[in-house]
Structure formats: C-alpha cells, structure tokens
Image 1 (tube, helix red, strand yellow):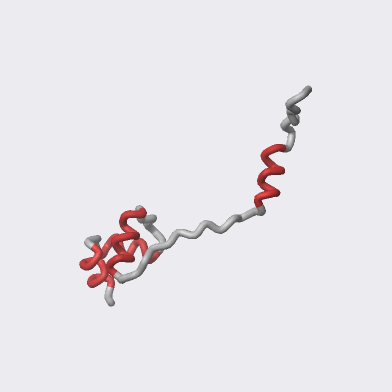
Image 2: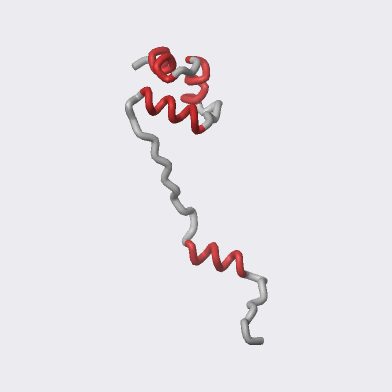
Length: 71
C-alpha cells in the first residue's frame, strides 16, 4: 500500500503521513487509531517500566522521614 492509499483510507493527508514516517511529526492518538484501522490492525499501548518498582519507591522515599502511627 502506498502512502497516498493509506492516507486516503485513514482520512489524513499524505504530507502528514510522510512526516510521521520520517519522525518529524508526532501524531495524536486519534490519528494513530485512524492509521491502524486503515491497516486493519489493532493499536496496543504497552507500558514498559524503565526501572523496577522497588527502585522507584526507594527514590521517592529517600529523605522523607518515616512516620509511625503510635509515636
């Protein structure tokens, strides 16, 4: 499928599609949905942690005095 065909099926301009492919334009989620629908694909967003949860918790609590309920 050409850019022109995909753009027409998705209802976006061919120019914007070219910019998206080149990494010069960051599309909105709604535009990505249109493109994936036009390709008969499902769009899945998968979060991938950059750090382990324990490390994030430790960073957030460093320097914060612990509070005890009975003190």
